[in-house]
Image (tube, rainbow, N blue to C red; front, top):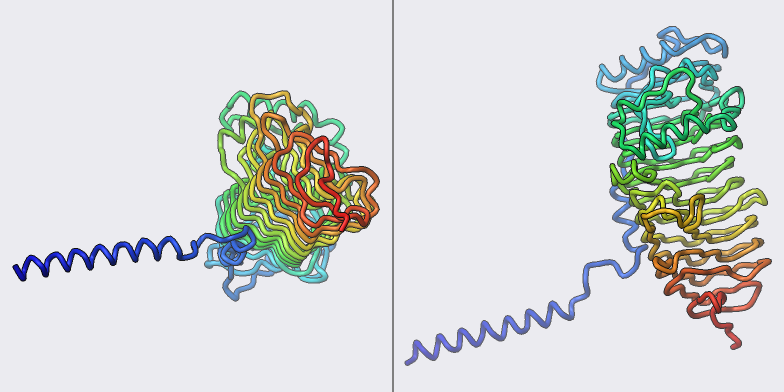
Length: 473
């Protein structure tokens, strides 16, 4: 009898403990972050700049001459090869102007450009052959080598306070008007699924190479240098991870002179940079159309902090080559200001690209003047609604953003079947706005304490009520 009572008491105690445990689980706060911004510290901890052995390889020791005329291509190649073979180090560029063809970085090599050092890239397209495995406007192919290129390397860097001059205006920029045939051919290869190694272009190619392209690389640092006048995009990491772009100046007002375009990459920090560009200052991408779907690699965990944007088509942009998707973008503490800057924050896509853009967080942005809109989300870019791959945009958050002059505060154009969803605009002030918000194809777009030309608006936006409710208190 006593044993039975004891056993019953034991079972009862266990039952009470299980009930208490369940209650504790229910009332204990979840470990998930309450807002997207709470994820930022952990994401920043993931991004670590590579370190290099204290070992220098001066390019002048291998035949380089800094007179701006002598071809130093072989000197760069030799120094990089020796640094890599030694286990890593700095390939140093001293004072002088060093003319070169493409530079191919290898693992554990830091290309260091001194303050008075200039790397000037040859405008001769034949220098950038044979073709390499690259990506051009979101489609892979065998094309001209990027000016600085790395393929499947780890721990690489471009640092210093010197200058990289792509000399785009000397030849390359003129190709914008005559590139259509090659562009259509490359896009046709992507559409038809031709194997990449068979998409070979040779000497008569008119598709301009980017300035810097790490391809399938890990642990990348670009810091301190001035990068100017690229033939095409300036900084274009592809299918790479753990990328830091810090205190870099990008100057280039040529056609398609985007500043920094991470594509199908993960864990990227763009910090303290200055952009004055002929196209988007920062454009986050993930492949184009069928070729993007073939790889299906999103870009995720992009952090933009303390940057300044002057001229360009957009300050922080996502798309339009975003078929693989973009998620977890954080932009904060930036200044964007120029009558020649079209938009501050821009998301662009269409029904040919498909893909998704989600979890976009923007705060503490000071916008002076932009030509069109402070925030533009557009599903009708280029081909518009003429495809079978409906895009999705969701969870876009903007707070503490101010502007001094624009045509629109918000310009949002989605599809009725796939509306732009869950957009939250909070504690923002848009001044000297010429036109009312333009919205269509939206769902759950909410204003919270938003001033437009001094008037406060709150509540949901609709196509019939693009401003929400005016606060008369």
